[in-house]
Amino acid sequence: MYFNRESVIDLKKSGLSVREISKKTGISKTTVERWLQEADKVIVSHCPVCGKEITYTRGHRPKKFCSDACCVKWWR
Image (cartoon, rainbow, N blue to C red):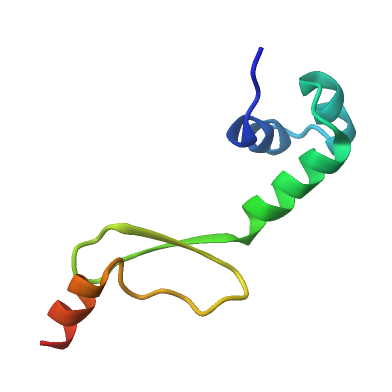
C-alpha cells in the first residue's frame, strides 16, 4: 500500500503517534515528523477578488492576492 503526506496527516489526526504512524506506513520516523511539521506551517486564505484559495508558509509575508491580475483589479 502506498502512503503519501495526506494519509500521514490523516493518521495523525486520528490520534496515532509518530512512532505508530511510522510502523504502520513503513516510512521512517524522521520523515513522518518532518511531513507533520511542514503541514503545520501551511496557512490557507482566499483571494478577495476572485475567491481562489491561497496557501502560504507560516513565518513568511502573507499573500493577499492569488495573482498579479487580481492585485491590479483590486487597486483599479
